[in-house]
Image: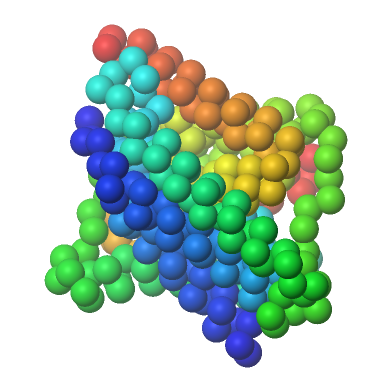
Length: 134
Length: 141
C-alpha cells in the first residue's frame, strides 16, 4: 500500500516536471528537434537537470541494500548493443519527430482535453502490441 | 516556434529526476514510461499496482497545476492527426523493440551510466532531428 502511494507520488512529481519544464507540449519538443529553425534548447537543460538529479539520487539510493517497500532493486541486466536496440531507438526517434510526443508527455497531455494525445496513445498501444507478434 | 525557458527547464528537469529517484528508492523500479504503459496491455505479463499508480499520478499532474495556478496548462500540437497516429505507431513499436524511451533510456539509463541507454538516446535524438529536418524540407521551409 505504501509502495503504491509512493509510485503515485512519483508519477505526480514526474508529471509536474513535464508540465513545469514545458516538455508536455509537442510544439516545444519539435522546436528542440528543429535545429535548422528557431532552435529552442530547453529540452537539453531539462535532460541535464534530470540526469544530474538522478545520477546523484541513484547513487545515494544504492547505498541501501533494498528499496523501502520492495525486497530488491529491479535493474535492467541487458548489456548488448544490438540491432534491436538501434532499430528500435531509430523508429522511436522518427515517431517522436513526426508527433512531438513520447510516452510520458502523451499520458500527461491526455488530461488536457485535446484529441491528439488520445490518437497518439491508441496508435502507440497498437505499436506496442504489434511488437509482441514480431 | 517556442521560447527558450532555461529556469523552468532546470526546475522541471530536477522534478523529473526526483521522481525517478523516488520510484527507485521506494519501489526499486526504473521510471521508464514506455514499459509502464505496456504493462497495461492485455494479456498482462506481470500485473503491478505500482504501474497503474504511477500512470494515475502522471495524468493527474496538469490538474494539480491548474488547482494551484488557476489555469490549466495548454499544449499545442503542430501536426495533423494522421501524423500523430503514424508517430504513435512508431513510438509504440520502437520503444518496445529498443527497450526504452526518453525516460527509461534518456534519464534513468544514462544516470546509471548504461552504454545501451547512451547509444539508444543518441540514436533517437538523431532520428528525431533528422525527421523534423525532412519535414521542414518537404514543407518548403
